[in-house]
Length: 300
Image (cartoon, rainbow, N blue to C red):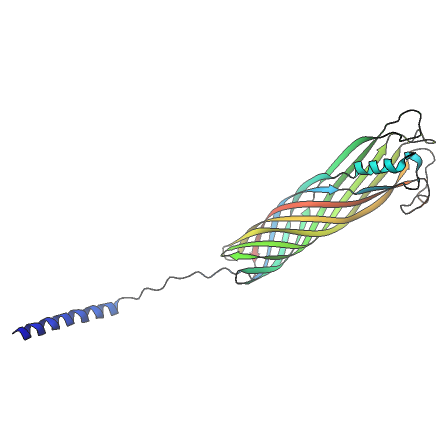
């Protein structure tokens, strides 16, 4: 009887286990969690941007009167022209709006991202300054101590800016942290005037005037960095800083007395080594800080 009871219990246990195994086999298998694919920065993109520019204009004034070509400055003309150049060449601030569009391409390998971008912007860093000072004695061959006032006025403005830059950075999920460096080109207008109150004999009643105005394409470097966030599939938004150093804006003008024996332009070209004239030469430089927001769309 004991053997019969053991056999019965073994059969019941085996049946229960078999039923549980069959039930487990019929249960649906839970799918593994879906892992979102990492965002890829590889591809062409196009977009627009807007921001502000704050910077400094350096007129770079130099006055060539080394041969005494214009006797306005009288004795000690070298010291006087250096003083005028220092006053007239003082830097001054400029600021304005910038905005435009950009196009570029990025490549990504692992977390490393690199590429190239070109942009074209409206760019108007406007600024001006006017300084009045006096020429120190002995400025002129006049009786008694003579302090002659003079005024220099400089102004700058722009019309467009274009940069071509390499981009390189590190991707973290949908974020891209990057640096950028390349070439910059800008169309800039600069004007400057000089006027003093009187001159040395024989033109005591005259005053000296210099006027310069030109528009040129400057070039230099652009460097900076930023952070960009991708969203909505193909869109990305970024904040960017650029430092732009523009140079190579040069020009000369001849200063003439307002009355008296006025030399002709043929006597006083900027390259002349003789004649009664002083040559005012400008070598303008702009140092600009640009902050902007850009929205990009990845094409493919």
